[in-house]
Length: 326
Length: 310
Image 1: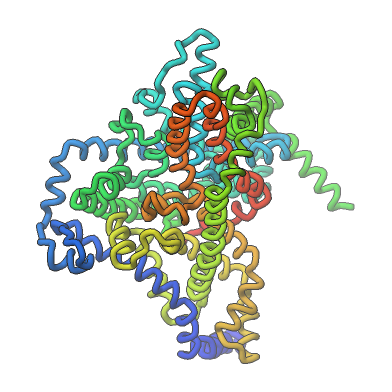
Image 2: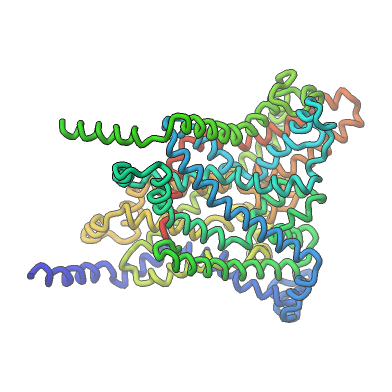
C-alpha cells in the first residue's frame, strides 16, 4: 500500500528536476539549427506556393520577392485552368497514377513473396550472398543505372542487339530508345529491379523476428507450410505492410524522376509514356521555362499527395489500429 | 544437459518443418537467378571498361571482349584534372553533408526523445508536417535560387538535402530505446548541462545509430545528381560532383569523338570514347559496391527501426 502511494510522488519529483525551464531552453538551443533549417527549406517553400496563383513575371535587376509580390498579378486559378486544358495534362496524370498503381501492387507482392521464400532456403550462407547481390541496385544512382541500361540497349553496340543479330533473330538495328511498347514494361521492370532487394530486406527482418515457438506450436497442431505462412507469417507482416503501403499511397502523385527521365535518357520518342508530373515540372522549370504551368502542377501534386497520405492512414487505421503511421 | 537435449528436439522440429528438398532447389535456383540479374549488368560495364576500344567497335559491348586494355583508365588518368576535381568535389560534398546532416538529425532526434521537454509535442508536429505536405519543386527552387542565392555554389549540393524528417524519427526512436533514462538522470544529478549530456553521454552510447544514419547520408550524397542538375549551370565545371559529370561527360565525349573524326583515323583510335564512359561509371560505382556489403547490417537495422511508427 505504502509503495503505491509513494510511486507517483517520486515520479513527480523526477519530472520536476528534469523539466526545469533551464533544461527546456538548453534543449531548444541544441536543436535550433535544425529548426532554422526546417523553416528555410521546408516551411518557406510552403508559402512559396503563392507563386501558383500569380502570373509570375520577372523584371531583370529586381529581386525575386519584388517580382513576385509587386510585379506579378494575382490570377486566381487561371494557371490551373490552363494546365487542365493543356494537351499533356491528361497523359502526365495518367502516367503518374498508372505506373504508381502497378508499382504499389508489385511493391508489396514481390518483396513479401521473395522474403517468405528466401526465409525458407536451407543454406543461410547462400541466402545471405543472394540477398547482398540483390541489394546492390538499391545503392546505385539512376545515372549509373542509365549507363547499365545503355550497355544493353544501345542501338549500335548494345548487347541485346548484338546477341539478337548473332542468333539471327533480329537485324541488330532495333532502336530500343524509341520503342514505346518495350519501355512501358521495361520501366516497371527497372523499378522492381532497383527496389526488390530493399523491400525484401525490410520484410525479411520482420520475418526473422517472429518467435519460432509459434511455428513449432503450429507444426505440432499439424499445420502445413502453406497454413503456417497464411496464419502466422502474413499476419505478423501486416503492420509493416500497412506502413509501407501508406508511404507508397502517399507518394502516388510523385514519381521517381531518375527512373522516368534519366533511365530512358530523356528520349524524345518516349515522351508519351515517360512524362510524369515530376518530369513535366522539371522540364517546365528548367528546360523550357513556363513557371506558371510548372508551379501549378507542382502545387497540385503536393496537395493531392497530402490528401492521399492522410486518407490512406485513416483507412489503414480503420482496418488495423496498430498499422497506422501517425 | 537437459537444455542441450531440449535444443536438439527444437532443432529436430525445425528440420522437420523445412520445405521439401525439391522446393528448396527451386527456391535456391530462383534466388541465384535474381542475384545474377542484379549483378550481371554491373559486371558487363566493368568488363567493357577494361576492353579495348577496337573490341567495342567491332563486336559491341560484350562479356567476352576480343582484347583487354587499360586504355580507358589511362585516358581518365591523363585527363585527370577534370575527373580528379569531380572526384574530390564528390568526396567533399559527401563528408560535409554527412557531418552536417548528422548534427541536424541527432540534435532534433534527441530533443524529441526527451520525455520532459516542454515543446516536444509541438516539434513532433513541426517535423511531421513536412512529411505530409511540401511546397514542391518550383517553390523550393525559387526560394533556394532567388532568396538564398544557392545557384552554382557547393551549398546547393549540400543544404537542400541535409536533413529529413524520416531520419529524425529514426534517431528519436534510437535514443528512446537505447539510451537508459537513468544515465541521463545521474549525469544531471552530477550537474551536467543538457549540451554536455548530449555530446558526452548520449552520442557515445548511440554510436551504432549515428553510424547508421551517417551511412544513409553518405550514400545519399555520393549518389546525388539531382541537386547538381537543378542548381548548377553547365559551365560551372569546377564544382561538378562525379554523378553530374557522368551526365555531362557523355555529351563531351561525343563532342570529342566527333572532332576526332576530322583529325583522321589514328586519333579516333586513340580516343577510347566508348570504354571511357564505362570506366567513369566504374569510378562512381566501385567505392559503393566495395563498401556496402560491410555496412549492410547497419542499413537493415536502420530500415527496421525506421519502420517503427512515428
